[in-house]
Image (tube, rainbow, N blue to C red; front, side, top):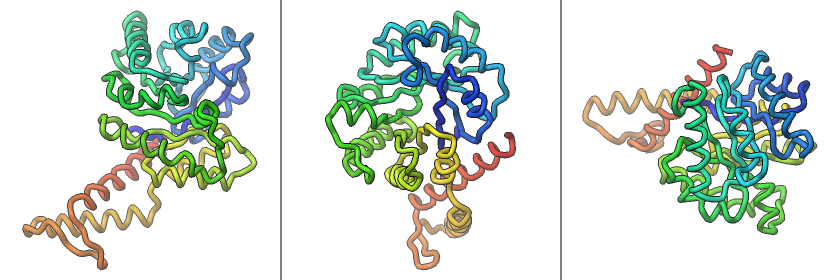
Length: 293
């Protein structure tokens, strides 16, 4: 299990912010070559990202390249598929053909640069109407993609939706991401950023809403958001303790030939136990990851 609770963006050409981001407790940092970098700075930003690979870090190292259809997308991929890059974030993805092309190119660059085949993760952000209507074919494209990400900023702009604080207008789209990902055998998706940096309570609410809907993590645009995302997408101590009790009680009952029991007045059967095992596995992965940092 790979922890994907928090993906923190940092401008690829801003050395001080990159240095700080790499020392934080985010599960992954995304050095940005797209929206956070001015057009005139894009070629130089690639070199700054490569230089950042030499810095100490506590997290996985991703790079958000420019979209495949832009004049910078190809050069970005060629420039950053190098040792020690853990993943590529591909923005504004709109079709299965596009993700297949990116997957093919990354694979060719891995071979060219003597990197492990399939070792670089590919995280597409779906953030347009065209991308959303192709969601199922993208998810089923049989590429290296393990999970999808939802980008609500460009998405609401593209559809003319008002992005409200309670985000109720995003409910059907978020739910579609979760259902399509599950049906295609992908991991749970990663949720959109929260853009109002002065509204910490809103970010916490958005994170809790996303977790309740089935997302496994959230993209962050400020360091203060990272601990909130990590906490929200992690099981708390009480939940883990209860999950262990459920597993122990059910294992004992199953050994006696029972497949359903009651614990504290609650009905327990295989789906409940599977969910409990998932909670315990995540808690153990978090503990191992924190011990290794």
